[in-house]
Structure formats: C-alpha cells, structure tokens
Length: 77
Ligand SMILES: [Zn+2]
Image (cartoon, rainbow, N blue to C red; front, side, top):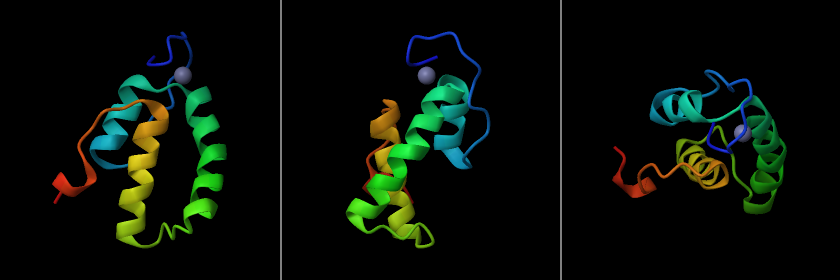
C-alpha cells in the first residue's frame, strides 16, 4: 500500500483511471480517512459533485490527499 502499511485494499471505490490507481495502491483505512476529509473539502470549496467540473476538482483533491500523481486536471478529455 502507498501509505506503507500492510492493510486490506480499498478495492473498486471509483470508476476510471483514478479508480484503477486507488484499487492498486490505497488501503481501506486511507480511503475511509479521505471520505471524512472529503466532506470538509466539499464544504470548504462549495463543490457540487453532481457537476462534472466539480467532480474533476474533487478527483484532483483525492489524488493530492492519497499521494497519487496522476495527470493535471486540464490534460484530461
Ligand atoms: Zn493506507
């Protein structure tokens, strides 16, 4: 796991490339921590996850929080 712990994997929690990365390297504990932190991020930035644009932003925060490099948001089609 990316956090260095030997723990149960988070599994398939998101679709797409980010979902693949999480499935490969993120444990269930870290994912749970992010779900808690995510609530504060959504409130702080006033994100509406129903909107694609806001969802993309949230995915970027997800990468940052979990330490996944990925691609800059603007490079995705
Ligand atoms: Zn972890």
